[in-house]
Amino acid sequence: MADIELDQAKTEAFADRMLNILNDGALALMISMGHRTGLFDVMSNLPPSTTDQIAGTAGLNERYVREWLGAMVTGGFVEYDPSHATYRLPPEHAASLTRSATPDNIAAFAQYIPLLGTIEDQVVACFKNGSGVPYSAFGRFHEVMAEDSGQTVVAALMDSILPLVPGLIDELKNGIEVLDVGCGAGRALNLMAAAFPKSRFTGYDISDEATATGRSAAERKGLTNLKFEIKDVTALGASEQYQLITAFDAIHDQVKPDKVLQEIAKALHPEGTFLMQDIAASSQVHNNIGHPVGPLLYTLSCMHCMTVSLAENGAGLGAMWGEELARKMLQEAGFTRIEVEKLPHDFQNAYYIIKK
Image (tube, rainbow, N blue to C red; front, side):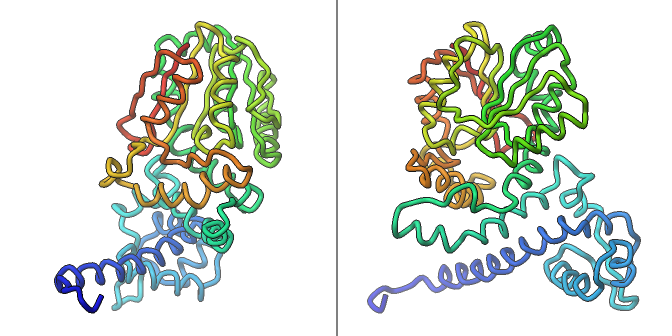
C-alpha cells in the first residue's frame, strides 16, 4: 500500500460508506426488534407519544423501548419532539414497516440479519473446511421464511401468480392433483386447498417442524383435501400423476437439484404445468450489479441456501444460481417449454411456467 498513490476523495467516500454500513447494520437489528415486538404496529396507530405511553400500549418495558427509540430517532425512522418528549412514526415510514402494510412491509425481511448472525461462527469455519451448516442449526428460519413467503407469494397467489398459467384457475376449480415440492409451513397449500375444494393437494418437505405447522393449520381449517408429508424429493416415485407441481423458492437450496427436477418431470402429467418461483437474478455476477437487493441475496445465499446444500455434500447452487443456469437445468431435466414472468410488485422473484 505504501507504493500506491490513493485517490483521496475515493478513499474518504468509501470510509463514509463504511460508517453508513455500520449504522445501517445496527438499524437492521433494531428494525427486526421493532417488527417482532410489534412496536412499529403500535406506533403507527398512536399520536405523538411519550416512552411511557408507547411502552404501556405495547405492553413492553419502558427502558428498553426508550433505548430502541433512540436508535430509531437517530436513524431517521421516528420523529422526536424535544419540547414535549414525544415520538411519532410518520405514516410514510409506517407504509414500509407495519404488518398492515403487507406486502410492502420491509421490516419483516430485517429478521434475516440477526437470524443469520447466529450461525456466523459456523459459516466462518466453512470458509476454511468447505463444509456446510445444516438446516437444524437455523433457529426460527421456517418461521421467518413463512412470513416472507406470506408477503411475496401467498399474498399474491390467487390474484397474480396462479393466473400466470392460462386456464389454471378453472382446472383447480374443476379438480386436479397438485403437489408442492419444498412446501415449508404450507401457507400456499392451505390457501389453495381452501379455495379449490375439488382439487387434491400434497405438500412435501424435509422439515418435521414445517410440515407439522402446515398440518396443524389444515386441521384447524377443517381441510380434508390436503396432506403434508416428510419426504426426500429426490425420490418422488410418481409417474405423470400431477396436473400442477409447484416449487416456491425451494429448488436452489436442494442437495441434488438436478435429481429433484428430473423427478418433477417424471411426476408431471403430460399436459400439466410446473410452476417454479425462484430468485430473479442472473447466473453472472456482473449482471447483478445494481440489483436492488443483490448484496442481501448473496448474503442469504452464502449463509443459508448454499451452505445447507453443502452440509449434505450437495450442489450448493445458492439463491443466485440465476435464470441462465435454471433454464439449462430445466432443459436437461426434460422440460421443453419454459417461460419466465415477473410481477410488477415483486422485483425479487421470477415465476417460471414450465411444460414438458
